[in-house]
Image (tube, rainbow, N blue to C red):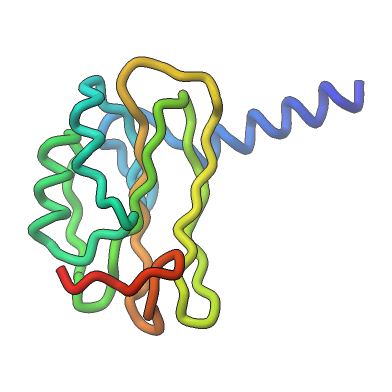
Length: 135
C-alpha cells in the first residue's frame, strides 16, 4: 500500500510539472508541449538556453508554441527536450552558474516533448558550466 501511494504521488507530480499539449502555456514564464516531427527537435539550443527574440520566435513557430512576449534584456529561456512521454524540472542559479537540468520518463514515444522556462538574466554568467552565449 505504501509503495502504491508513492507511485501515485510520483505520477501526480510528473503530471503537474509536465503540462499538456502543443503550445500550451503553463504559466507566465513556461511552456510545455509535444511535437510530432522529431526532426524539429534539432532546433533546441545545444547549450539549453535561448538568449534572443529571433531564436525564440523561430522555435515557437516551428514547434507550434503560442508565442508569448519575453524581454530578453531581462530574461532568458531555458529549453529541455525528450523523446520520453513526460518532461519536467526547472533551472536553478548557483554562484552565477545556471543549472539547466530536466528530468523525463524513459518510455520513448513518437515525436518529442519540450519545456521552455523563462529565468532572470541577472547574475547568470554560465549555463551548466559553459559561458552564456552572446546570441
